[in-house]
Image (cartoon, rainbow, N blue to C red):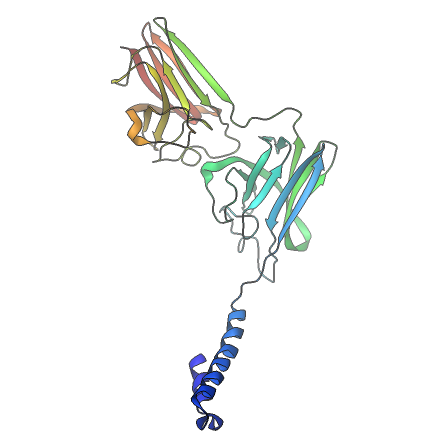
Length: 346
């Protein structure tokens, strides 16, 4: 189209006898007139950012989100796909900031900043509270999920043109979070917790063998409605085996763990999970975040025994059990997975 327009300009009789510089000026002007409208035609529809907040028990709760409109489109099951994690907004990720520790749909949410996603379906929606922040809305890491919470769904009689978040107070210490768009309304009750909430508290376990102490100190996360194995605990990748700071293993005795000699001292424990096999990783680095892992500092990798539990365990648990005067077993359990490895004093 642009090429044809320029040819037409060049063949105007009025240009044939003009000075070359005049012809060049006309060509540049004509080109700009043709290009600029086409550029404006390609600009995407602007989606504004919006926010909603509530003050409950003197604490601010704030949600910031991109607010798209229907614009004649079918939303649910089309623009918002079913059975896939949705950004629940537009542009930058939708952000929840809370100055209060919350109990949201029965789940404990410590005060802080989070990203909100949803997992929609025709019958049931889940609200996803994710610890990663500052990213684009289409970037989602399930390993950073703090909680997945079922929302109550109902049908509206009048369509809502723009995606809308509402924080509605219904008492001095409680309220309701609502998300509405098209003819879908979702809601979730929340309340301000009267006591501080720690999402993944530290826990520890100790065992005395032949007068020597063996201990494990670890972060103990809960299921919180999430799928754990293969998601929060990724298959085929090194897992921190706990939460927050690296899991600390201390032994006052030289041990043989799964046939490998482990000198007395302090180590970090990681695991390498898969659907069929787990490996325990004993690493010489200490004091770091559980997300920091350097393979060159591995002391050993030991194969673990895996079995399926009859009932699900809500909180990740480490235990040390005695199997003899100088022998024991290390057991890790979460959801319906139990893995273990035997050890003895050298």
